[in-house]
Length: 599
Image: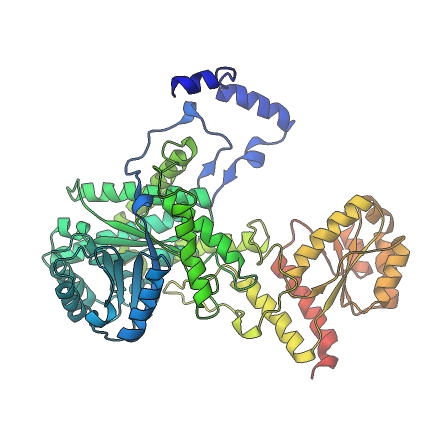
């Protein structure tokens, strides 16, 4: 700390961890510290609420300033040379400095790269066939230029998503390493880890499986006569960026360090690789899709602070339609704004030396190394994928994640919380169900189950021309009835029903009578616990004496649930209820009453 800062902070004495804990313990008033303040992540790491110099750890290696030379990628489909070139030039004009060409057909390199300055623009290629002839053309075209980027032949990603390992692609990759030997900044060996996170894995698993696949591929390429030094100098890793901001920062930093440890086992101290981070499929929504812009922004920030070399941000509407010019432009602008206006590209990495980030990075690295060693000890990547151990481990984490989402303990705006009730979603873009292949990984959105539930509503509306109406019938204590009505409004809004604003009544009897006679299909009782104790049973009995078909719910957690259920209450909505279970049950009962309205 500078002398100036020492003077500035001299009036603020340092606080030890012991002093801080004493104050926190007093403020908690007997509440459990771990339960209230410690965040338990699905990586198996517990994150403390405070880090300082007393519990700081040795800073990881491989921190850096990659953001100052960050490649801002855009994916371009090259179905023919002219269209692919036009899209690439348009992207460059809009500030993009990296193009990933999706090579659908055979396109002449000269036509595809016409007008693109290879000394300034990074060009990468996803090649699904004819990789060797294309690369021969490419290196001839790029002779004398600083060719930067990578080639991805879908070797690892194709294997984990189809279950078929294409041995011939190992020969192709070995040849690509030789063909591109004059271009040290162009990588011929691409390994993808995005499929793990997008299939529900945690960050520790993504790192461990990706590094394990590296060892597997390295051994394969060594058999083809490729030197380990050349393999590691040709590496490009494609990793996904998930929802947990600080954990994602730590993930990329941990990956860099573990990669160095793996290289050291091959007696390599110096090598040159790149990491390209891509916004995840898992975190995206098709309901209230504009919120994907916010997710993409925080994901890009995490990757940049994690010291990646390039970022690919998907358009916010990519999950349900072809990206428009507008959505593609906005996606590219996110990284530009972070680099130029938020100064990410003009300063050294601001998280270097952060006690919290260093702790997160180190803990993730320790956990990932432990899993990596377990995989290698059990036969390595290929054996563990073939015997489905990797898929089973991912499935275990995925189910935990989905449970947290359906319980709304992992909030996702526009999906399970704060739904856009003004939005009308076309049936055809909503998921109709989950098909799981037991032997391969299937990248997917976390929201698929909730989308399938929403689809039921939209199909009901399409068949009846009527959208189910939800009435929030409140009475009694003003504060509690409004709080519970607001909660119910948000909770049931996920279903796609027409949820009306709270309607207040003078007392329980009036509320029960009027709501039973209304044109609503679902009624939610909203009041305080004291009011429920005194009047909830009578409310239900009065309501059911008038109407037996409507869905009747209560917002809260009443103690006399058995009595209320016997009187005719269909269920409750509260912080502990599962949004999928409750809303699906509501839909089933509403569907029965709507059958007579079908057209």
